[in-house]
Image (cartoon, rainbow, N blue to C red; front, side):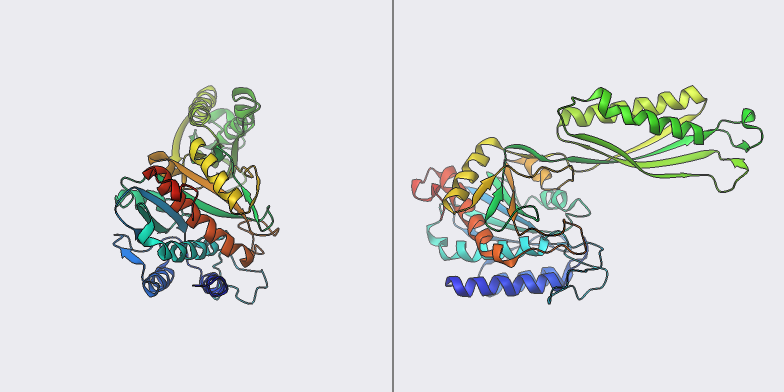
Length: 386
């Protein structure tokens, strides 16, 4: 496929995907469309025993490298004004997963053209449910990536202009944990607080003390965050309730800080509860670990991107999470931010990804995969990428 035809194909595919967003684990129409396009381009589909999502493979015997794109949208009503805006009210591709999927399709087409010469196999993963999150774990549980030597992914960035790639070694996105704390005391008449255990005052003291968890326990040069995002207690004006429930999130960039925050939060909640004569029940729900780029493969990816003509800068780090991190727990991975034009932020109703970045993104993914195979196979011809 010549450059003009590929560019048109990518833009048309992106527009269709953007206008048909589906939520996590509901990406049935998206999955069908992706499989149709892969089949049309004579790319081998693989069995992926999940209700949504798709997998395919290009190449021949030898090392295995993976490319991943997520495919789910968000429960947002679009306000971008695009001519190809969402046709599914209350659903929007506000994080660029439509861009990721289209770019991966483009990479697949480019790799297919060189399939006979590839020194190994490239496995393409169109992953469901990144926003939920958890889709990456379900993909890993299928065993479809067993033996992979490396994995690569791009993510749209409204902070970078088209033609720019943000990439750094080490942690670039945070571990994301959720917690629910239920304080239990003794309900009583508001006129007689001495006859009960006031969980509202208990919760207020805990919330105030929690603000010191990061500032007085973590390295001040590290990026960590703990926030209470929901408080629920009582249902009338003259009764002190028996329970108060708090919900929040903890974000951290290292395994050590993640463990420290969890342990200190538990100790603080239990200690405050004991001091007031109540008790604390804590439900800690661990999400994705930190998204941490392998140093060696990051150097390799930077070299490939430089040859592809990208302007390079450090990754715009974020305390948001990304379930690509689950893959990086299993094998080396690189997660790069590709500039898609300055716009409203990800997860905004006005977010826009410039389709001009699609073809460069597709070329970069293809070059990363081919080059990684060359590196793993010791094939000097392909070490530099396509």
